[in-house]
Amino acid sequence: MSINTKEKILNSAIKIFIENGYSGARMRDIADEAGINKGLLHYYFKSKNALFTEVIKSSAQDFFPKLGRILHSDKTFFEKIELIVDEYIEVLLKNPHFPPFIVNELNNNTDIFINTLFSAVSIPDKAFVFSLIQEEVSKGNIKSVNPVHLILDTLSLIIYPFLARPALKKISEMNDEQFYDLMRLRKRTIVDTLINNIKI
Amino acid sequence: MSINTKEKILNSAIKIFIENGYSGARMRDIADEAGINKGLLHYYFKSKNALFTEVIKSSAQDFFPKLGRILHSDKTFFEKIELIVDEYIEVLLKNPHFPPFIVNELNNNTDIFINTLFSAVSIPDKAFVFSLIQEEVSKGNIKSVNPVHLILDTLSLIIYPFLARPALKKISEMNDEQFYDLMRLRKRTIVDTLINNIKI
DNA sequence: GTCTATATTCAGATAGAC
DNA sequence: GTCTATCTGAATATAGAC
Image 1: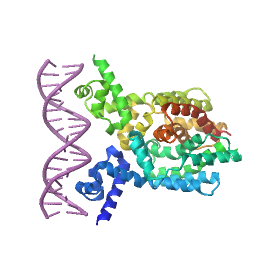
Image 2: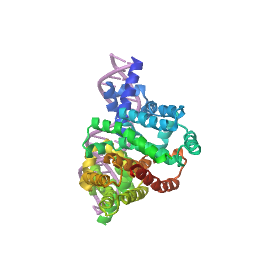
Image 3: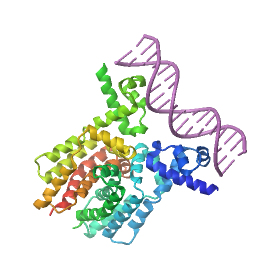
Image 4: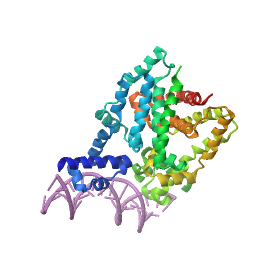
């Protein structure tokens, strides 16, 4: 069945690319993972590059739309922070290989990668996020902060542990389950750190 | 001159490996960068892998020893935090490609990479860092915190912007110089965030 | 649509002249 | 020590049978 096979290839490609990066992933492995042969792979996707583009588009769908919905919701500012931390970490726990994949491609293939990403999903608008923060400042709800730093703080605290995960596991002699537990506990810690830093 | 050539190769290799990662780096490019040919490259370094090992050893020397010296110094706890943030960011500003390089190799080649790293440089001892933090807690100088989270907070805030650098530059329409200025200002922000979070 | 077999390309490694 | 030329192997991509 045509559609089924294409789906199967795409899912296998997501897995292999995300685990190994572009240059580390082999068409051979993707074909094996999908239970088909290399020829058929090229029948559905003209080239490795074309397949990769589809993978970026498809996998990024899980991440950014959710973020946008929270930012545009009618929750309070502090509730939004809490929701972002909670949901982002949950998504990453389900896709722990995603952050290193993004970092790697972003740094090795910047322009192509960013353009593909931007054309595939809607990234929350910078100006909108800035205005959200500045509004809270002028209302006197939070300290006067540079929005760039607040955004960087938030992303850093959430994402970094997933990038350092192999080192963290090795040094702390953790298994996957223990890493999982640590990150779920860390949600509270991150929210506290962020709020401690901006509350009046 | 033998020694000079070997040095030249090593410096070129550091540059090429760090910019492109292991699988992205080509022996051809390293030879070109060093102004020699591939044959000579293999004369000095038996294989790509052997050369890579030397690169890891050599480049990691800049990072970890400095950290250890600060931790073992006789400064106060808060001064140590300030020094670590300051010096770490300075080193990274001089080597902005280093964090994505480490993250990539760490995630694609975990065991070999970590073993090579540990054999090359002395990473600050986990137990020692923990005891530093716990001592401050029992002295009543800082809140009772889980050392793992404090260490993760610190590393996250310092390192993450260098991993997201290409995206940050693109979204904020920054050039290298502006990124540099942002990170120098950010030192103060990071220290404040960390201390805000642990002070009594 | 799916397969096998083959062509092509490219990077790592070696051999051998100077 | 340094070079050029060549070998080998691996991975992407294509051709063509079924």
